[in-house]
Image 1: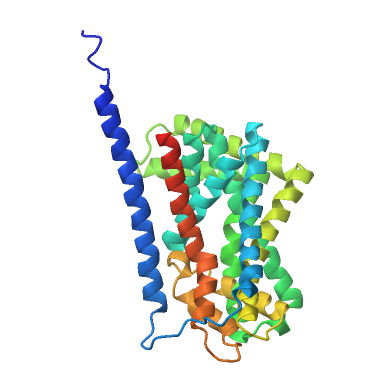
Image 2: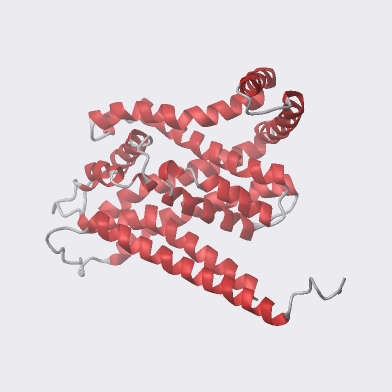
Length: 348
């Protein structure tokens, strides 16, 4: 056999490199187009709205800082988890993983795309498979539980502060959705006997349906993976110092995001207080949790009108655009920029 048969020519390698670079550029352009198209669809009105040119834009700095604090808290949390399981700090990988996850969370229905892409990204960058699978799960569980904690705080002290009794009542349904999956995952990790019986029952059913053939071999493989995942979760739960940091950073992320509407409304002249705005935002997010649209589009704008309608002028157009930019489109843009950054690094 000719030893050069499987050798790639330099011209072919360059052609493939240029092809990948072109794909990255087209991908970024596609994302920009999606952002503009979605923004136009969401915010276009029959009558033109004059831009608030006289607004002192520095008043929006607290809203921007709130967003940045939230994102940095999430990145640092992932960095802690990566260090815990791989024994190495990797802030760049943590940042890319967070932004890629939030990007896919915001473009897929019910935010189902984030964790799979985070797992894939970390596996590509050398994180062992079981850790690459568990870090996003732990990140997701902690973020969801942090929001549930804020919901309980809203129920205990914020009922009179929420601006709508209907939204407050609907929030109870959303709290169940938020709590179900993280509580189930933690319960399975802490109750291995119950988990084994549950998995065994599921495998037996799949065998009867002829979906799997070798039940014992499949059971041994599945139990091995379940034990690895349970060990990872318990290692975080039993490490009180790490657990405190992870949950603290998750609460900080959630607080940062639900504080943005207050700062935006305040910048545009609204007189709403911080706690009514924040507790109402928590109730709204819980109430629309089960809306299966990317980024809760449609339901989010209609529901958050409760907060923005407190503006004295009644003009909610530009405040809602600024809020949506910081809480939704910014993550899409950051994800696109992250892909461009990785493409340029591969080029170098």
